[in-house]
Amino acid sequence: MTEPSELLQVEHLEGGVALVRMNRPERLNALNPGLIQALNDWFGSLRTGNYEVRAVVLTGAGRAFCAGGDFAPRDPNAEPPAWHRSHPELESIRAIRDADVPVVGAVNGYALGGGFSIALACDVRMAADDAVFQVAQMKRGIVPEYGLSYFLQEALGRQRALDLIYSARRVDAAEALALGLVLDVVPRDDLEARAIALARTYAEGAPLGNAAAKRLVYAVEDPDLTRVQEMSIAYIGQLRNTEDGAEGVNSFLERREPRFRGR
Image 1 (cartoon, rainbow, N blue to C red):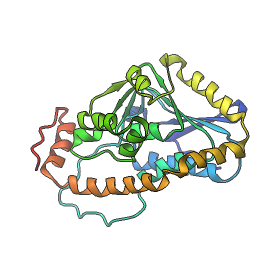
Image 2: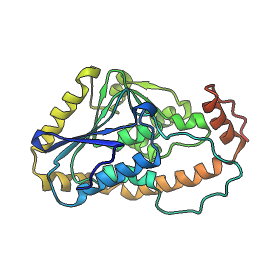
Image 3: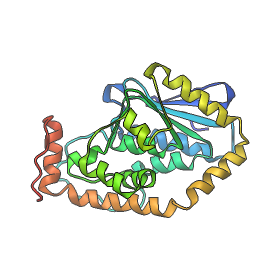
Image 4: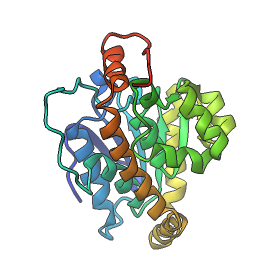
């Protein structure tokens, strides 16, 4: 099995459960290239047929699950990157979905933008009572990425998905439970223990049966998820070159609400 990096803490527990923490607490576990690659490598290693790990709990170190992408201003004079079919940030989602073991998301604090997608990529989710979800990309003048527009429609239906996307409003843990985005809401201090207990019940199942069942559940959606991910990358590339795209970045850096003009 791939060794975790310092950006991804992995603790092996009794019963075949691995507790995995995204570990950039000073940045609210925002996704930078190192953390993305660590997620890709470690979850990718769970497709080797070695069932030392039989279930996973994924959470964030500190006070957030994952606050999305590690936002940095884009150089307006930089050459646009060549188009690639494979993007590491997309592979993180697929690595979690394709892992041949149940993955329980233990959502503590913020799950914003790409962090919302990471949470929805988990097979089931348990939220702390302080959890907050948001389609934060819409505040930046771009579109939901990491497959988020697909996951929201899958989980909520078209109308509710578009409501969360258009409004970019924050969803607290109680509403997330009512909407069916999470399986349960528990006190923050109990989150990891409760998620581990749930993962242990899954780990008691037949490893090959769990792997096959997971593949069957997701088989019908694989082509659609891939298409949405790739289209999102293309749209974002265009939107970042607009005035509204620049305003989204500037408003974030200046800690104010954006003023979009449709240009």
